[in-house]
Image 1 (cartoon, rainbow over the protein chains, first blue to last red):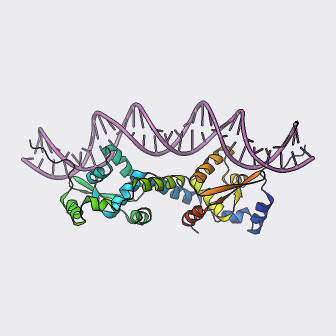
Image 2: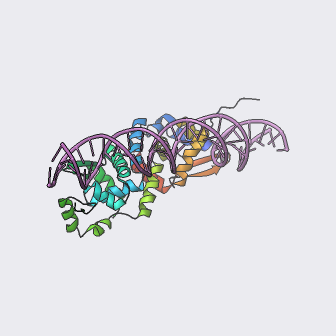
Image 3: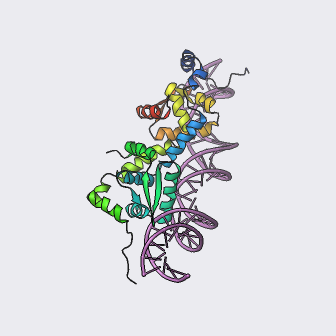
Length: 119
Length: 119
DNA sequence: AAGTTATTTCAAAAAAAATTGAAATACCTG
DNA sequence: CAGGTATTTCAATTTTTTTTGAAATAACTT
């Protein structure tokens, strides 16, 4: 029983890799772990329909929490949780105005909203 | 003690809403629940650095599972799980070739990869 | 200061997603 | 067909995220 190289790759793929200068060359096109993690975190913030809805609302109207709440119709504590996720990922920001806190999209949030809340 | 209207909105916001034709008009700019859910599902598939890494690898090289595995360095069962998520969200597809299954990006996957795996 | 409204925080519970290792499947080879 | 390689599936566990309701803050009003 002869031992075979583990993790072999089919011949045609192996050839393609060779033609591209080897695996090392190929991997230069893959972003660093740090960049991938940053992107993943942003996508995670966007991975909830409720949060997307809030983003699309703020895109057309800056809103106090109470207005957002009347649109999405959930408990305040729940809403607060989702707002904090959007805030921590840099998509929205809140400004206190008297008793109220007015949320609006950041520049990043506007960019994302433009792609997500298609006209 | 007079009861106040609940869910009041600050005056300036109320005015802005009025100027835009009311809340109903504003909400016409918010995608339907169905659309929001669809988008959220796509973002969820992208919300993991490992999955993003796979996407960026496939962007430059179609790969069998064994090649992907040698790049990401995790157990097969774990990898299979993540591949299934990418497959179910329409970002990648696999074609059996003998003993191997070669994964590649779908058209949708290519579009997304173009934005995510920045050059 | 006491009451009221808007909003957040907290801790516990529930739900969803990810990891693990073992077993199953699918295909190839001799 | 027996044995081997590549890959997936499964059930159990662990981890992460979300939900919930109650309590805490913060600022306004009287």
